[in-house]
Length: 324
Image (cartoon, rainbow, N blue to C red):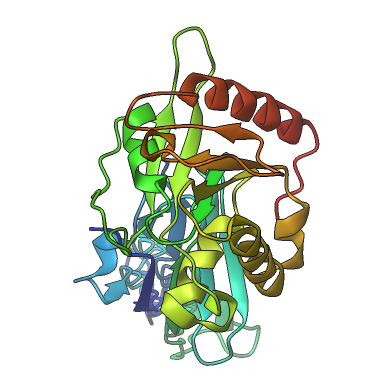
């Protein structure tokens, strides 16, 4: 199941308390203070894991807690640090504070970490309160509480190619033809309701990632048809393949509709390298002005040539990669 938005609560660990303690040694009747400090509480740390591609792990895990710090002890011993909670997230995860709406982090690289809630500081023991006039202080401080935050996690897929088109334009069929991804394919609109990623790796090539984005409709940039939720996944793609089926009665209008929705959502999207693909040529129909390539994912016509064109576009885009 693909999950791309969740709400969670995180609580870092409380710091351990400092203690009141005095030396007790043979032949030393009145030893000085030796109360140690409490250990700090555990942090909540997000870490990017390339093996993840969805926020599904958070669907039933709404509250994440780190360990509390240990209390100090005699002989000036500091308590143990609380156990940090390392939370694995997929690349492309954006972290927001729910209350303020502030973006706290944008996690894109494998192994990248974000300390989202720091553990509370440990309290200090009575050894720190000794003075020349106060040699047996009976005072220590408690540890500080940990931080608690309510967060919104959103996922934007990271891909080399984003497939864009109206519902039923042939995006899922193409992805299933050229990769091991198996999105649902059927001859009716809105078959694809969640994004799918596929690894494209023809023999002798470096591989690249293709994303099948659910179909856009007019008004998608205003949220129609879950437009906002789908369009944000296109923001991370280096190049765009705009698919229009050969039986479209007005392909020029369709292209303009798609470009207008992309621009309304994020103006930088229409400046990305793109290729216009006429699909479903096995159904007949004529080409039209502005088409870069015609394909049939059913018969395979033009598919290899399309992949070659996409590979060149991606290699060029990587040189000047400015995806935000």
